[in-house]
Length: 326
Image 1 (cartoon, one colour):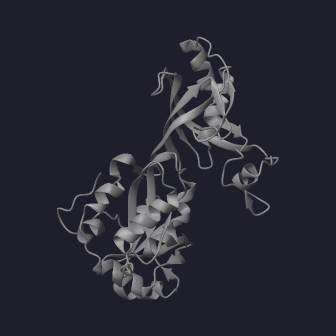
Image 2: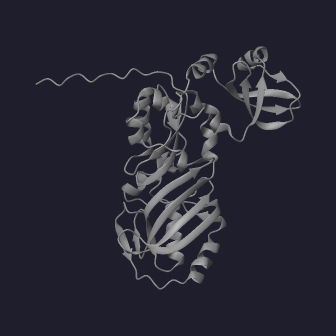
């Protein structure tokens, strides 16, 4: 029996940011491709990966939003994690094989506070072998799978806030509940392993969830399951505008004639104070044109939408009353 031909998805221009609550078991790219298919989007990318064993906030950028996604890679992140004590694994999480078991000593609140203070502020981390960090053009996890240990230099990261609480994991094993807000490049698996080492018994993560990245938090996110249950208009209504990626930029609005010149790449002069990051909008109709910086009264383009993209964003109207949540 001949299989029925697969229906080809008709792609379309889609512009904006989808805050996805990534489920367990999917890579960031698998989650992106699923959302891209549901929206029938031509172009998409994400702003930093989450491991398959991690869930939570994953901003997905569509269309012209991909032009501004790189700036979001530097955003601070917040996580919740569970560290099972007394068991070390090869990967620092539940995916790896057990490499050591140790008894868990009685841990007092005072000891836990001492360890918490030790990991606050600037700390040095050695990137784990099971990571996507590159060495000579090859990801570290590729070396690890081949049984090769590569020398890695410690990197400075910043732990802005850290909360540790004694508890148990889902299998009634001694555990530490971790809440952390940190700079980009922080490996939470490594933080968990280092905390376990400081407590004298080792440990590995059994749960990891990202609850915030930059200005975006988990309450704003939508699940793939909810997205699947929507019609196309409702899915489009879940997208945040492109400028949601530019929350740290000073806004400048240009009248129509000036907007057209700026959009063609020309510098404009005006009464603006110097600013390193500016989001530039057209006045009538109001639409994002791109980013710039201001120096000595001159608005200097940095990253621009094309006139076609501007027109498409204006046509992409949200549907009132559409759900926007998990």
